Figure 1 (cartoon, rainbow, N blue to C red):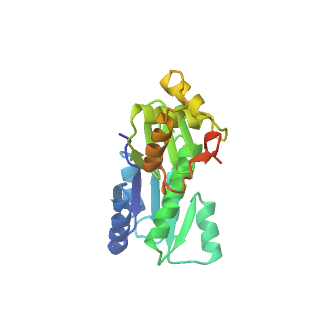
Figure 2: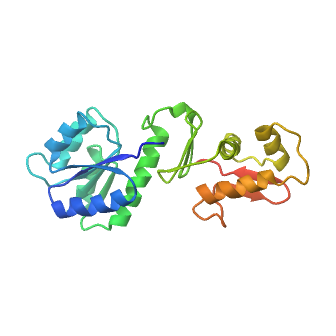
Figure 3: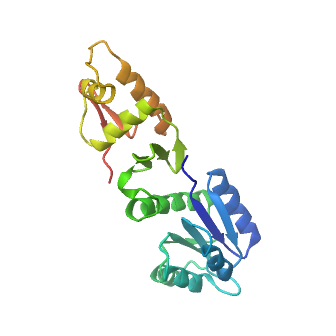
Length: 234
């Protein structure tokens, strides 16, 4: 099973830490906490962190200094939090290595959405997860052909071997339409019979597991009278 992404919450206001912990915890993330920049740097010596949410105004070591020190060695996404919302503060935050900037007070759901977006970008373009060469990343969908693991919106999805084989085949030919006969021959290694609805059944089960709305599929699209295709990654 895939390990959940680890998020480090750094803020000296315990109410804000607790609020973020609830919302990110509900999404299944592994949560670590620090009260200032110095504690955050100590945690980074022993923990693998996928994303940091870093407050600007803190005692001992503020978020600006902490961000600069983190960037000397590590490249995970950093989202800055600050009660200051002027443009110059945002520019300062981003110029020292932050990936995003959120003003306080913030909407927790928006913060979670921004964190997910940063994690997707990190996993797509950097070495954020092992076996990079064995992964297909298609929007919120991640397929690891080495471990046969699948994630949707950072959550693990459990597929049968046949379901995974169908999904992998479509991912390898994303953007191209494959007929039911082509899919059946490739996955089942048998001759296809016109009355055989095995592929259709597996596509339906796949959609129920990976599509946010299986009735209006985003990843696996039906091309009527021809077959199925996987949406192309951007």
